[in-house]
Image (cartoon, rainbow, N blue to C red; front, side, top):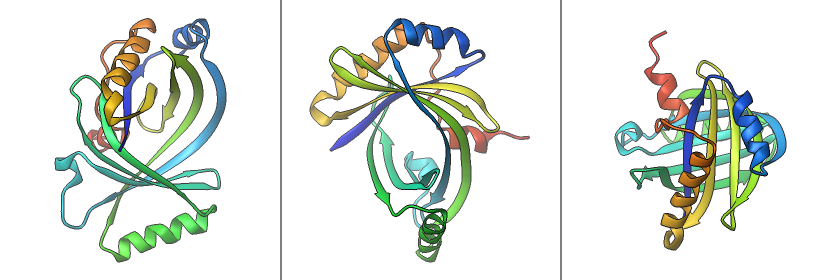
Length: 184
């Protein structure tokens, strides 16, 4: 079973972090626009179970993702299943309709511009994302994928990268939860 192990930090100013990413050898990859549409389960409250189901569109590319409950108190570690499906906005719209026909309800879209970086830290591949989230601001995510047997090593690696970047006060709530909590 694969787990996503991540930490996310709000940033007032991304410039110092970009400098530190360069200093530690992070390689800038690409900048893309992502649109995530989240769905509520018809018989259980994902807000209570800390699960998520989303359709992600990156340009013409589409993915559907299930995220299980968080299983770690220091990082946001959770079981993740992500599958690509046919390209195109119409295909993503049709999958959304299929989910709705099965009584899943659309909750909200989360739109962001993501600049990706890659880094190898302690022999582990790390993905770093600088996210400009519509309605929320700027965040830095540090993430790796782990198997059950190396979740603790993955967590320690993510915590080490965050410390090296002098990042504190991780935001454990998803972008969706933060947007839903806003009163404006």
